[in-house]
Length: 129
Picture (tube, one colour):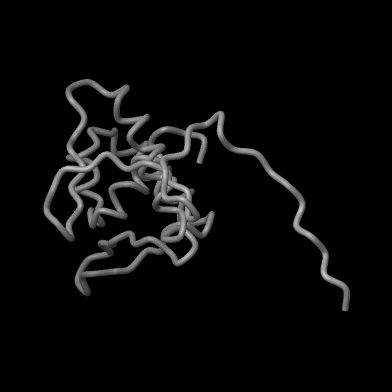
């Protein structure tokens, strides 16, 4: 996942871009690189390949359950990766309300935005049996 194309492919698949040609057009990635990245994502268990034509071995690529759980993180990483591509980044749209959005990490307790310098870990208390 450390490779920028992998993050962008996962992001596109999460937005419903599932076919090789669509991914090639939207990302502007070389076909041989796209093939390698798709194969590695399938091998890693993040995408599953589904044949969508009986007469030709043409496939769609869909997120696995594990990959779906990681979509919020990938959206944020994808935004960073996309900002380094030529041209303006695309606008994210919250499909429930139809408005443009800039996703932020928020606290589940106070609902405030979380900055990187506002996070730390602590051990959970171990409850006796």
